[in-house]
Length: 323
Length: 235
Image 1 (cartoon, chains in turn red, purple):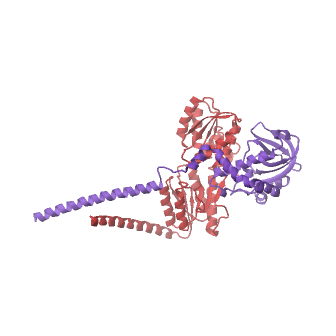
Image 2 (cartoon, chains in turn blue, purple; image 1 turned 60 degrees about the horizontal axis):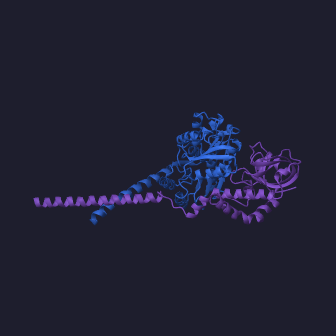
């Protein structure tokens, strides 16, 4: 029995070894084919969301402009997948990794692995729960953004009246941060009354349904503040369908659809996370680090969000703002 | 012959049985290992320390006291002296800032990454308007030699993070996350307004000439007057 087991084990082990060798060989052959340019690996959550697509595109364009080859990889918010992508980046001998990560805790090990292999990581958008591992963490200041959105909302509401809040996916840190920013600000206005707060999980269809129910319960609401733009769009569609197109809706993200809605005089404002700018900044700092061994900046950097309303929406470009 | 072949057959089938059994064991083992890996990397539950839960539960109170603890030792020994020492005359710097925000920013301002610049300023001027129809109240000031009006915040709602970001005493790197960082800004704003209006009702300032120390964030896109968070007002 032990003999058979060992045979089976042996065959499994040899299969795995062969596979590993093949993969390694494939990985080694590729970079030697194009060795003139250094490589920047760009690892992002999902290109289906226009926010992450804008983020990846901006990093890629900037890196190419600075003379790098690029490799864009997608982890779909899966830390296991992300870990494999780090292996790929390491095998391809990337000069730097630009990362929008798949989890504040789960990512630490992957970034450390790259660091140990001599590859610096530059994080954009989301932070990790460790310092000294990544070279830079460029985070959009969601709390500051939420305060901006809430201040504008209070102003539009005339600082009084009933309103509802749509909250993002409750397991997502940013849902909590934005909601806290909204409530810290709006609770300072005693005549503003929050009559309902519900999660619609960042989702447009869910926001539409939730808002339909809310309208029946509270037909006189004057405003709705939403944790992101897709929920704002869903909520506004429900309000409009109920003949309440004048209800004040404010979103968060600065998506192209909401920019169009603001231009059309429907949704009143959103908060732009300047993700294009974040990506470009991260690549700039990576370039500087590759050339000089330092970025000249603190590791943790917050980038302020910007309010988009009818006054400046004409300067809006996909997830960015022209001067 | 028959015997041998029979025994050989039975031996082979016994071998096959063992092999199948081993194979099944191996599959189960591999499944377990995979499951263990998956669970390690993506735990189906999250362990959170109770302290964390508690601070979330009670909301701003605990955060505020942490922020208060952070600000206490620096408020009188670092933040206020920095203003006394480094605040620029607003009548001098504001025209320079308007003319060339980047150059003036590098010379007089302070910022994180590529955010707007923050400035520490002082100035003397006449309060011409008090706006307290909004909870985020402001006082408009006309300053001799300056061709634009400026405003300072009179509360009770105080906006922005100019005070936190202008002095260089506080930076994001000192905090584990943006919420703690934001709490410190709120704490600083609260103390500033309390100190500035300790001896005077802001509404009574209309028509008076005041000297102020404070901070503002410069946004070239805003058409409204520069909005100062005051740390000291005398008249």
